Image (tube, rainbow, N blue to C red; front, side):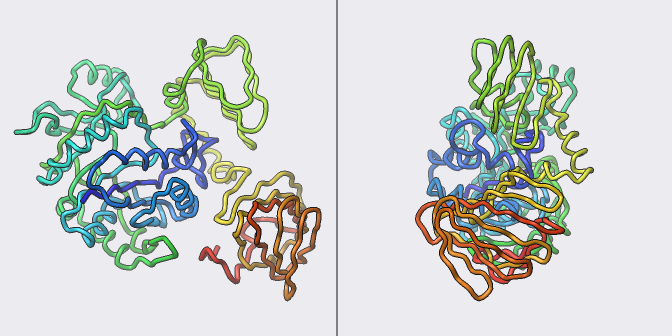
Length: 472
């Protein structure tokens, strides 16, 4: 049995300001109407003898991930929640430990959730070709046939064919991201492939090799899974045990040390969408080499990526620029310096700027809210509550709230009262009073909330009851 394992724990900081900690790139529709996560799952449709996928994600993204799966009718074996990121080797260990409880001979297909493959048929052929090797206890990785001397990727050196196999090569060595001259030499030799971070192997064999080369990762992963707790549709790993786990990649922990690593060359239009220039390369360009998305007007602009999310974006007489506009931030970068976006994000995090974590529109399991105005002692939010959804029963120590219904029907609990409000009706929630907002209708509920008080932070919420199991 083949179990797809989708790793959805990354942040994608090089695609800031669109990708942020609370809503990272794998959850965004960057290339078509579906998100990268949804595209990754749909790509599996041509692979034979597979079971339901296993998803591993950051616990803060759990409701977003679950909703995106529901929208494409994918029902996972588990959605495993990582309390914090520990790279790919522990994530694969947890997946393997879980898989062997279903099938001791299970084969895992490990896939990042944020990659693009333009030719899914070629991807399917490569996976099917790798299955016999995985069953023979090889650890299979997929090496991308390089098209340019990229310095943003690691490389795999492989030349020797596997006996009795026409597609795979024995891995000679893995190499880190090279400088440009070294990358040119790699390409010229024809002996190197980009490291895709995609793997195919038997769960039991990966665990055996992990026990040999990284037993501390295996031990910590076992403890985190043994102490895991079921939380609605999620499996929540034990935080203390998982925090003690070393943070290492599958490459570093196992693949660079094992004698059973093989690579299957893959030429399928792969892209890890690791930067704005990568997104520019794979997007449809006009006759001036520009990609324009949203409300964009240009004059004498060349070879640029222009994306407007919330307002008119205009550009005149520029070239080789990446210009991305969101509701609360604008990025302007030369195409040759997009890898440095991470440095900007690091500086913003050092300054404790919220723009690294949250968009102005914040998604919650019940819907979303967006701050549309704020000053020192007041804040105005636009709130959308999905049909049948409910906010927690809560109170605030430092703020009161006015609620105005713009569209739909609101069921409101205020202290001991329960009331129904419709369009253009409003109510007041005094400071310190327990309250709950629900949408009993079949249409989205649109609200305007005016907060006033000495402190308006999101951490001023005391929850008494929550249907989503949230405690903070």
